[in-house]
Image (cartoon, rainbow, N blue to C red; front, side):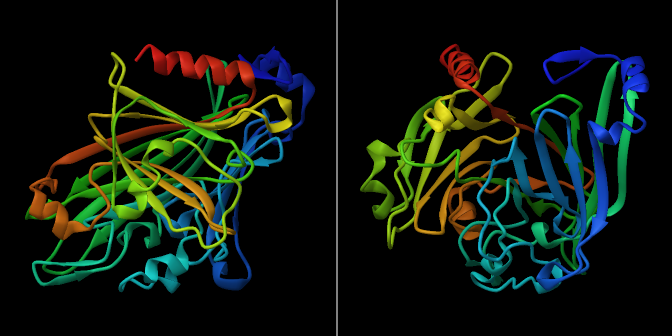
Length: 359
């Protein structure tokens, strides 16, 4: 049964109530027509709960926008939506196409700070987010009494004499839900082992981030990336109004998982509209053992990144130097699974905190 508008409805009920289910929940597949986004394929999802989000297919099916009952779940940068044609791989050029959004995927063979690794010059955060999706399938279907909305596709990162990695992605939600699921697999279809660096750059902004918002997470240990972050280490979970000339702070967290291996984290604004509001993520620590917090309280650049990963963000050379660089062997497949959702009121925030306390 799908629960919308405070009541449960069956498939048969909807057959009587609407001519098209898109009146309640659905998808729309279209193309952007102007600016730097011109030519990009996009897919809108809406679930009937007030939850809606947009995928950009030219950008690895990353999530450009997301809303819940008119409230944005994410930070959107000044670049807005930028086609993969404009990718600048050198140095920090990646930032010119960083729309922020609910999800930007980083990797697959390098990410983090620009560096030189074994004679190869590597830019910021990798190529995969600027890789168009192929073999795309958008689907809406009943499975029993659940109405499933999904998008599937694949992105290949490859080069002659180098890596040949295939990212297969499925993103789905259900009618009545205020959450989505991401199922990714990365397969090495080449004949040699390849570095594998993956980070899910989840960018939370206003109004979930506003004033005295706070980060809820089961951290066992917090390490600042550098001296700038060390200045505010004790307040890693506290936030402020936007600050002029703020310098970003990055923290590495050692996270505690529950009995099922799940790590839970949320950014919440307890005071928004007197009800509270937040965005949460769940992921498997075995798949993504690292967690990075990006605290950026700047004017315009007002965002907190909650970023599960299989590495840190100091570049591939540092990862290799530390002996922590992961590899994927020929024929090997690695899975990554995440859930992103809404905490819509004080009760849901309290229940989520209790789940973390039990961890």
